[in-house]
Image 1 (cartoon, rainbow, N blue to C red):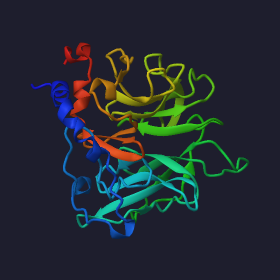
Image 2 (cartoon, rainbow, N blue to C red):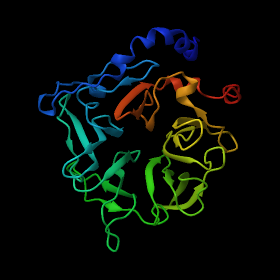
Image 3 (cartoon, one colour):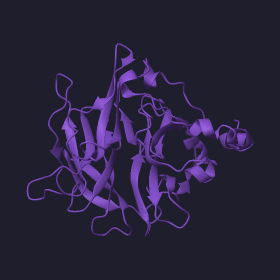
Length: 316
């Protein structure tokens, strides 16, 4: 099998000449958007080099953050910096209706407060997100995890804030879930070793319990968070910051003893010219999305297998 990493190394010189177009932002007015049809907003699937996702429709002159598809692939939610009236990020959505994607608009449960970090339950019946919306006794809270339930008419319920141990008086961000319901999130709650750590929470009898700080192979004295967990829990992609070698996206794989391999920096290993955050892999496992410099990029998820340590490959 041809090595993806070798292919990337061979093509680096030719890619340098493409960098201006790679970084170019389409500034189409939202009122005059292109008509997009079909899966993944009708975009040509990317290879092993990141490409802007839906330029001029999703990735624009505005500052886009994290993104997520519904499990059926018919809805795409993403965060945009909204100067007026919010002055912060809020969640937008576009939907595929009769094969055509609708004009993006603010999600019906958002728009008044800061909302980011969306994640679906595996069955698509619940949408989680993080928000700074006020709560009784705390009009200016840190980020807490909230959710909306899918109603019979396919609309969303009013947002509900989750209880302890998901939420604490500290900041919780970027919830992500396995197919069994286990939650991973980032928090700077008591017991964290850095500015933020990754925690896992078990799902037992319909409730989350037992928040566990992951071992030193994941969490350091610097910052780790904005984690994407594979549905089968075989790997996680982590945003890292504050460390001497700089910020970026790392990946770690789960071993047979339920510990995690040493993190590997994705951008440096694959010789990308981007520094990413907000990782997400599509429900079908085919594409890896991330944010860089205020735009959303995607790339073939085949790179994940290329990053797997030899010690794990030998056991397959």
